[in-house]
Amino acid sequence: MKIKKGDNVLVITGKNRGKTGKVVTVDPAKSTVKIAGVNIMKRHLKARRNQPGGITEIISPLPASKVMFVCSHCGNKPVRLGYKLSATNTKERICKVCKSTV
Ligand SMILES: [Zn+2]
Image 1 (cartoon, protein in one colour):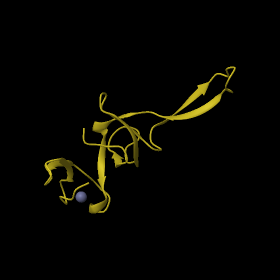
Image 2 (cartoon, protein in one colour):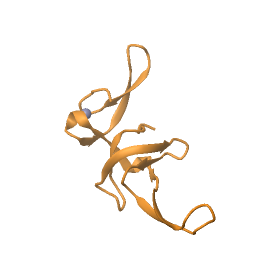
Image 3 (cartoon, helix red, strand yellow):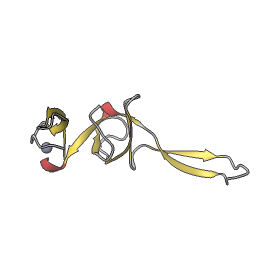
Image 4 (cartoon, helix red, strand yellow):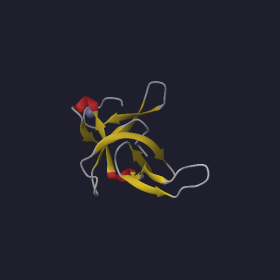
């Protein structure tokens, strides 16, 4: 999957459509991403001996296919990513619009 931790992404579908944020976690096995400030769920916790009860907010993962990478070189537009081989033969991600390495 092309999205990596720390990327700025735009949610393109679902109830969070149009929101942008930074990827905080990726799960390659499930192809999901967690985005800071997007898809927050409230968990009601029962008080236990070691911790007080209450409501905490957790980020719920979104499928990676529902987000698009936001390219800072293209004026923060959502773009598709491609791969190219660098001079040292490592795979680099490139923006398909401006061809810059991201
Ligand atoms: Zn670009």
